[in-house]
Length: 282
Ligand code: PAF
Image 1 (cartoon, protein in one colour):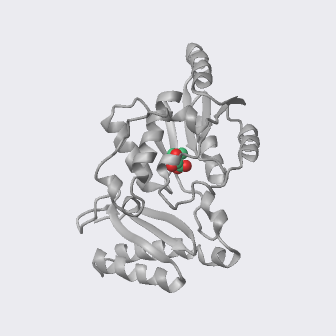
Image 2 (tube, helix red, strand yellow):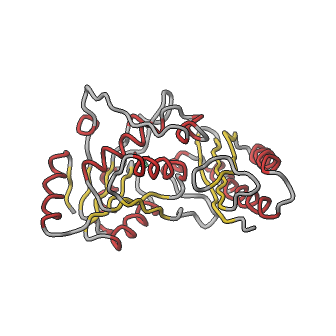
């Protein structure tokens, strides 16, 4: 596996592969790789001749008081995992490799970036869109794979790719969960032993909210309120639990059939997000 630290390093390798007629799949990450990331890499290997993984804890997507400085950095272990799984290259840039000190361009996918997580993390999705656009320009992949756990992030990126005519195919990949339902996340490592026992309730509440939507006996607003209360009873501090149209994440109305329920809630000091998406049928 090639270790690439700078943008010119990536350009040289990508040029060689392109000259050989090879296709490239890309998995952007912030490191601290878990089974969900490895699943993305395995799926990427099936989809292209070459797989590039980036590991970059992107400062512009963290707000003031968030966990940028404490975000788990486990580069050595990550490289070993990527080498074992058979990634072709890992891009490990420093902040100054990615951002020019005079950088003046920011990408904002308006509307969707201000709702749900965006309302609680102002600027977060601009940071994500900007770095992902830059990484696409650096790696120039044919396909890029993103986990469905970050459903809103995926929607922001798909919207950006559409609006800016970026020539990359976005491949959504199912959330990987613990046997108890907890979605894998690098931030799960922040949970205390007692919080780890409660955390799986987040997914159970989502599944119960989905069942309530399908049963159709309550309004969406009533369901949202009821399950926010449930989360509070379990000890979460919910930011939101919202029933949305899965296509564009607008609030869902009764006639919508393709739905996603998005949730974000704090457990102690750890902010967890998750979702369930489904077809309500008519
Ligand atoms: O999902 C993540 O790990 C990050 O938001 C991403 C897409 C790598 C951008 O920094």
